[in-house]
Amino acid sequence: MTLETTLPAPQEAPAPPAARPPRRRVGARAVVSQVLLTAVLVLFLMPFVWMVASALKPPAEVFGGTGLIGSEIRWSNFAEAWSYLPFGRFMINGLFVAVTGTVVVCVTSVLSAYAFARLRFRFRDRLFLLYLGTLMVPQEVTVVPMFILMQQFGWVDGYAALILPWAFTAFGTFLLRQFFLGIPRELEEAATIDGAGRVRVLLQVIVPIAKPAVAVLAAFTFINYWNSFLWPLIVVNSRDMSTVPLGLNLFLSQNGNQWHLLMAASAISMVPTVAMVVLLQRHLVRGIALSGLGGR
Image 1 (cartoon, rainbow, N blue to C red):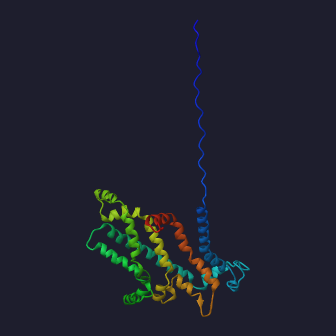
Image 2 (image 1 turned 90 degrees about the horizontal axis):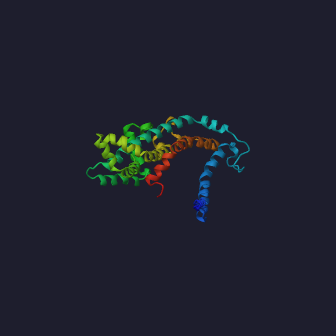
C-alpha cells in the first residue's frame, strides 16, 4: 500500500491595493496668482460694466450718483442711439474698411514675410531691418504727408484713403516671418519634388500651417482699423463716410452731450470685435502661444 502525499495547491499572492493618485496640494503661490488674476479681471471688466449700466439709465442719472443701476432700465436707449444719428451707416463704413483692410494686410504680409523668410536675394536682411524700422515712426508724423498724397490722388473722403495708407504694415511681416522661419524646410522640399512651384508651396503648405499666426494678425488688424480715430478724422469730410469712432464723437456736440446714447452706441460698436474674437478664439490662443506674443 503506497501512501500518497497530497501537496496543497499554491495560492496566488493577494494583489496589492491600487495606489491612489497623490493629492495635489494647492500652494500659496497658486492661490495668490488666482487672486491677482481675478483682481485684474475685475479691473478690466469694470469700465465695460459701467458702460452697459450707463447705457440703461435715464439721461439725468448717468452722473447723478444713483449707483450702478438706475431707477429704471431703459432698453429704448439702444434704439434711440441707433436712430439719433445714422449709426447704421457708420457701422457699415467701419465694417467695410476693417474687413477690406484686414484682407489686404494679411495678403501683403504673407507675401512679404515669405519673401524675407525663404527667398534669397541681395540685401535681404538689410532691407528687412529698414522695413522693420518703420515701426518706430509714429502715426502723427506721417499723417500730414499722407494726407497731401491722398489729396493729390483724389482719394480724400473715400474708402481708398481709409484703407490703403495703412495696408502695408511691417508688424504683420515681422510676425509672419518669424513664424515661417519655424516651419521645417523639408515640407517645402517634399512639395517641390512633387512638382509644386513657389506659389503652390506658399498656398498649400505654408499658409495652412500658419493659420494661427494669420488669425492673430487678422484680429489685431481688424481692431486697429475699427478703432482708428485720428486718420479718419483728418481724411473724412462728410458724415456719410464717417466710421464708428467718428460717429461716437458726434454724440458730443454744442447742443448737449448725450451720454446715455453715447454709452449705448459704444456698447453696440463692441459687438463686431467681440464676435470676431469669439469666433477666432481657438486660433488666437494657439497663434499667440506659437508666435511668442504671449511673453514666453
